[in-house]
Image (cartoon, rainbow, N blue to C red; front, side, top):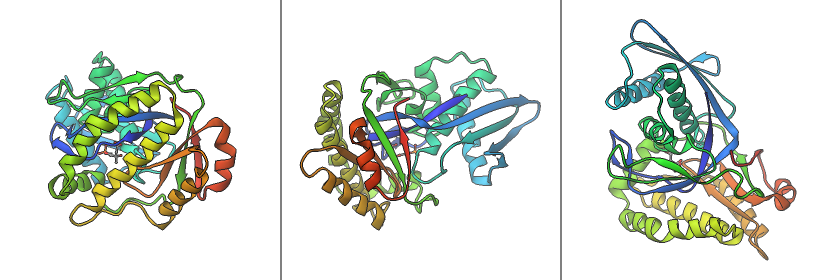
Length: 309
Ligand code: PMV
């Protein structure tokens, strides 16, 4: 079963509940057509998990993550005690801040649903995927997706707000500056931000009350200039939170900052592009079809151009 990666414009960065993966605030993302994970699950007699990623047996850490996910998911779904052979293929660099866990756990939830005949609907699949990785709750859906923060397993789930064809001229350019693994995993980084960033509560309140409604209006009106301005603001704010975390979290590097400057220069007369960074140095750049070629020529690194899935 295939699930696509997503890029959040309003980020998830912090949990209220580590077990259920309930976020401190809602988030908003775009599902990306060119970045995906395909997963098949085979259920055999026995116990435990055998995980293969891109044809190779995955490491201990990945096995532990999947086991932890299955344990949490068992509390809510009829997952038998059996041996799960999980084969996953992905078409983009893993763990480089490109939401590989998002498409990974979304694809795994869909594959389990199929292999075990669970008959879960979209909202239920989103809840299940959330138990693997927060951002995965959004990746089970297409288009422009909101993850409602909620307050328990039932109320915390994602849904499509605008379908994939709503903003047809919109494009996302993923710029791969560095495909190495990130220094501090998002799980650890966000926990540090929640407990040490002095303006963390101000930030979540501002995003929920001011930025989320502003984003929804800009998208509804397909107002690129407003949308792009909000996107860059939200990314900057999240990285300000990271910088104000103890010890500070540096996800951007010199090349990332160079891209910020390039985009600012490109936008000097009219806002034609917006950068956003997750917990890694690689930017995703939103733009419109008409500015694509010009922008591609300007940007460094390997580029993946995507539409909305
Ligand atoms: O789902 P996780 O635990 O990999 O967290 C991802 C968080 C960010 O990518 C940094 C932001 C987001 O909302 O996708």
